[in-house]
Length: 113
Length: 113
Image (cartoon, rainbow over all chains, first blue to last red; front, side, top):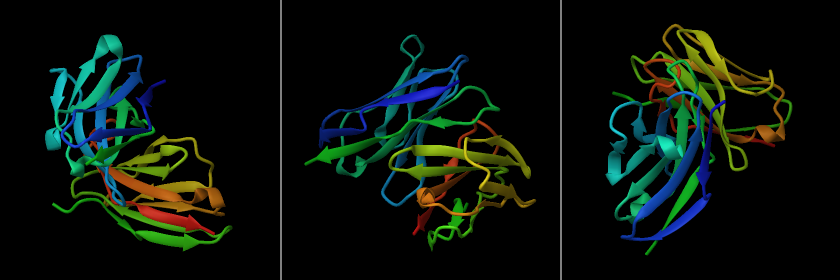
């Protein structure tokens, strides 16, 4: 069975600092990996996804994530945090094209002025 | 292209009642998935429909049901509402079923009194 673990339900960073949101997954087959963002009172928006190929994936709003098979990780980073990045972030995994997507419990990102 | 729309956005019901939520996917998308989001449990998968057939189902009681119409619009129904059913119900559509990229609607906020 697949699973996703997001380390830290809340993360605070200063504006301009590096953002690092951690995600580890388990999957018995090569995974598809996703990061979604949810702003207050809104649905989820896809930030980026990894299916195959290059392990460093660039997404919207300056975010990127790196698939590390040996570490079963897919951490999300952004070099410089902006106040508008304050939101909840969800990592998700799927293992093949006929399988459902499993979401992590989310990490709420707080940006300190 | 219009995004995923969900109606109604807010709903208040009392215990024992039933409720029907509606989701209109992005034009051309044939898969619709439903999720329940609560502070304690996070995002939990309810079910997925593709071409009017239920393809996947999460671990929810039979009180939760859904269907998909020939135009890909979907409805979910919850009968005999319980207080614990209070949640944000999110609908997501994708072109293909399973692990294809999902696009989320804004959700329906259900409050059960």
